[in-house]
Length: 263
Length: 328
Image (cartoon, rainbow over all chains, first blue to last red; front, side, top):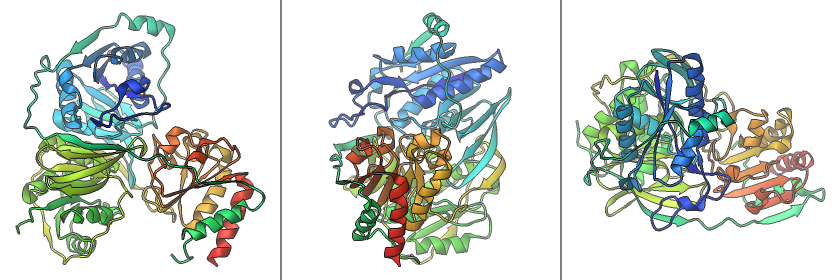
């Protein structure tokens, strides 16, 4: 089975993340780049499956600028992926979801796949829509936001907990799934994996090689303004001297935050 | 088919498999009606069209389209995408609006990919300028405010649940069936199904006016009754920090923050939560924040309107008693 795992580089959430207020784009140089944790979990799903089915090939696929991404992606190879494909093109600066999904769909077709696994939503964009867009563009079946996954030769099944219901469902392959952080943590790369990663195939593709020609007429989502919200200030702070509960209740009452019993 | 106004906003509302309107419809229709004419689309089992039509008109939908696909119970998303495509073709809306729920997002994303439309996710509001519909976003935990729009054609927008307080005036009921041609595209097949909402008398975390959250400072799952007691006294929902979830005190569905639910209630009370940047990202746009923590250096105090350095196990019971006394 050929499994593509979508990987994303994001700014580390332990630091402060900033937007360029001119362009509305992420200020990449301002924060430490890391592989998004949820994409590591997606990789873990693929690697666990390969342990059961030795005929499985695990391919990392990412789209993004040159610079730190190749080094970041090496971690995925060190964890155990077989090879990596990086789509990189200066025309992708500021690409919206629609274009990104088109590029990933073209790259997935170029590589060939039985199953594509993605994280459900990244920590930076947080859209949570790309796997669904990819499913539609590839014309295959998909399952989004799975909290459990079972993969066999011809089908993938899994469970999803939405805001209102939960269900078990299955798809026939080929297909696309996205997984939530309910799935197990990713393994750590060991020394042997880190050494082996240096020799693993790493392919770089541009848009021309994928046969993508950018069309100015295509509908795009564009940023029309970006502003920083004023920082929130600390208000009153007291040490509890035995009456803090009463003082909070008084504060709530003054701000009309205590509802009547029947309300 | 009657004509549709040029300023139509197509709104996908969520209906349960038993044909009941789920929460969130009023918010979506309210937001749509604030910028145009709200045309609601609902997928429902046969026999609910008239009632749903009246209910949605009462919430402000000027027109209501009902699709009754056969595969409603067995398919995950494709009937919804097909219905959105059919409705968009009939209505030619200026924008398509869904909830930023797991299913709403899935349907919106697939519809945008199929129709080649621009997609604006997790908007916290919509407005209009002379060129069309604009989506407003709150980014990186509310640290930034970003506006987006489509370069051409209709913008597909998912609206964060509980983000908009706009509600529309009732309209006369105007409901019709929407014929939908099934695309036959591959879809997942549902093998087991369970409704999970309304299991609790407490409000849902998303969209709640008041949220009381507990962190590692609670010390155990049993001690979460302290959080529950305060939430019930205030009529609020219950949340938790990632530390409390990771420690196994409460399930992950209650996690507020970066990787959990983002909330923006009128009142947020943090009990025994230090306020790591990941937690603050999920709650710092709350109108009023109250924090109680033993550690005077906890970062939660930097954003709290009212902070108490003290022991939650003595302060909270006193607070609950004082609230009960004030409420009478």
